[in-house]
Length: 244
Image (cartoon, rainbow, N blue to C red; front, side, top):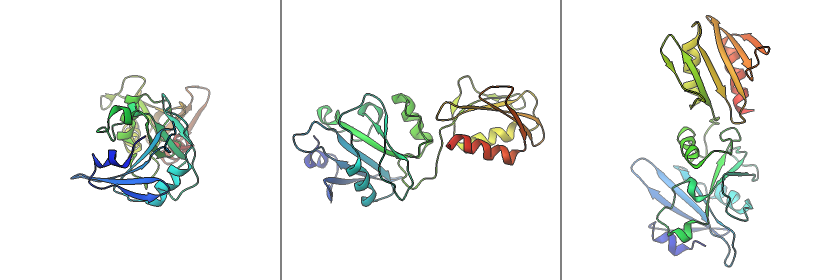
């Protein structure tokens, strides 16, 4: 169990915000990181719970989440848990064991081994089966500590563009939606170019160009399931696919 004195070894101040939740702050040249910790009850074998917010102090939201989560032990991999509806419209929290993140690394190992990161998220941002390395990479694509963020769906892009020489190896690379749109623009009117998109559920959509503002959308690599459309409709369909 992590106690207030453990945090005082890492932070200048530790404040109780009620309901057993402690708050401390880390100031850096680029951002302020608010740490919210709910230690396990005395004598309990339940894990300690941690939330971290970048540049947003929201005690009410932190208490809402940390007091509503029921995580009886330390999982070996990521798990998704629900919490009450909130102002940020998150679908729940992704619970990460200590090997998946670096926060509070200054704690002794025997304290940190029972510390879980609780990451509020939208359902389409993570698959939930990411390895520790994949999770770290995903958190660079998703502004995961920004509680007021818009949805940043998980996107794995495999593509080839003979006109630019750009492309990626299978199974693809993690990208954000803006980069995906740029690659779709890049294949507009280009023969033998393609964009292959995988979403958080493992679903796949392939995009081909057959002329200016004329695209073919193929569902689940089934050539019998093709639709012809312009870019505006294509972008709408892909966004729905990524966030459904």
